[in-house]
Amino acid sequence: MIRGLYSSATGMIVTQKQAASIEENLDNVRNPGYREEQNIVTSFPSMLLERISAGSGAEKVPIGGMGTGVNADRLAMKLGSGLVVETNQPTDVALVSEGFFVVQTRAGERFTRNGHFELDEANRLRTTAGNLVLGENGEIGPLGPNFSIEYDGTVRDNGEVVDRLRIVDIQGTELQREGKTTLYNTTQIPVPVARDTIQMRQGAIEESNVNVNDQMVKMVVAMRAYEASQRVLQIQDQSIEKAVNEVGKV
Image 1 (spheres, rainbow, N blue to C red):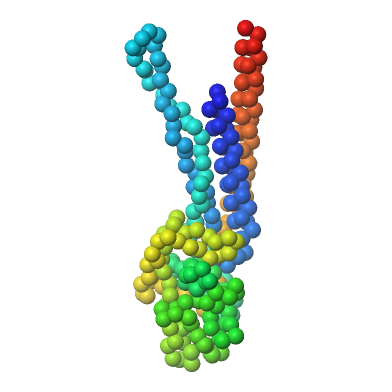
Image 2 (cartoon, one colour; image 1 turned 120 degrees about the horizontal axis):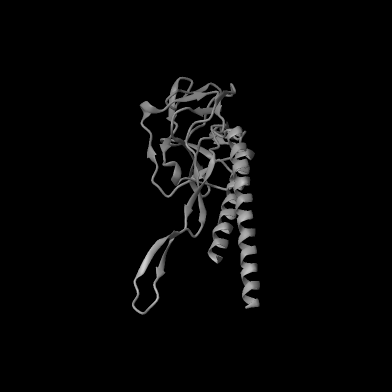
């Protein structure tokens, strides 16, 4: 009976975490390059129940298993591209194909799908947070007013090749978002994406891949699951109270 309390309580905790993730997704729906986050829900180990017959040395007869609850201990990034929107800003770059831009932060290299870039005071390509965008040869720049970025990431300035945007591939489940940004980190070694598979579009950005309607449905489901677990918890509590009172009368 006590185990039933744990199962219901862990179910409520998981749905709370799911609701928090949904809220985070909705908050970032207009954030370029944001990837929807999903909770990875796992079950605690189940317990095997056995019936023990009376008498010494009696055989234990398995009568089935019992779940001990669930847990949501980590987040995974949902793969899939967002809508590409034209901005006509030369520093904006939409990565249409798979992969991630590489940027240099104070903590090291990080990865992003957010191509809303700008030029710094030295005319180097950087993110709006001030992190330099990396090419195959390092930082990109200085760039003149007539620079261009081709579909494969080649950066030209007045027709001359400056560098090529560095694009890498990483398994989505291994990426961890840093704080409230669209920067991701990983313990994996990023793999360079083959040039002939890269597709970019200058003067455009990729929006988030969050579907608002889908998130609203998930929120309703999560709230109903929370309410169901709450009702079960109340029933378990009432059963325990009744059992304690009945025992007290014996």
